Image 1 (cartoon, rainbow, N blue to C red):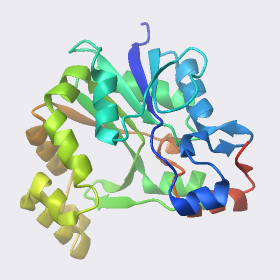
Image 2: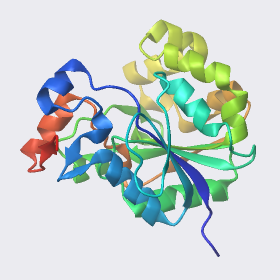
Image 3: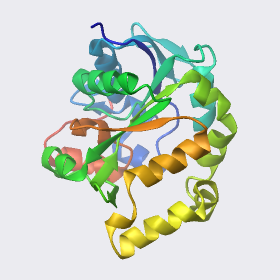
Image 4: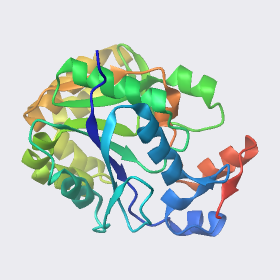
Length: 258
């Protein structure tokens, strides 16, 4: 059976925070070099070699990687997501990837996309068992959530139908605007799921399950959703803080500007 083909979008907009700029000399973290190659180039190569990415769009004020089409950075993450979906047919899948995932592999991309398309869900998100991340990248801090099924960390990929992106443009803008406010995010997610999350943290992880979260996401999005539990820990390793750069250097990686 042939591999599915999707439109891939690399989100490479945004500027480095002042402390990251001071530590690396790179104003756009997508252009931060790891082992002599920019993170953007490493992500694009993983997509190109995966066998599942057809057209590759890069959103950001960067030079176009070979074989890619560049869209300008709007200055707003949510708007960048939306503009990339504008010309893709309703039922077609888009694979979104951030440009700061330097260890992303073609195998990880192919596995995630293939399993996501086979699920038939409107949107798919990767989750990685935390222990696998610790084994593969022991020095990298990760934000994790303990659930009934185990403790997981999220990945930096999203597979979603173009029509779902456009239909939920308003929600996407609200969610991005609320990302740094617990109260604002609670208003979007609903107090029921927030209360479960608090009780799960205080009492027992068994009080919150993947099914609870998925049900709420599906209600909000008006679309079917599917988690993809993956063993490819590299999907969850993004470099966007000074401590990440320091941890890579301490692990022996060459990190910096050209």
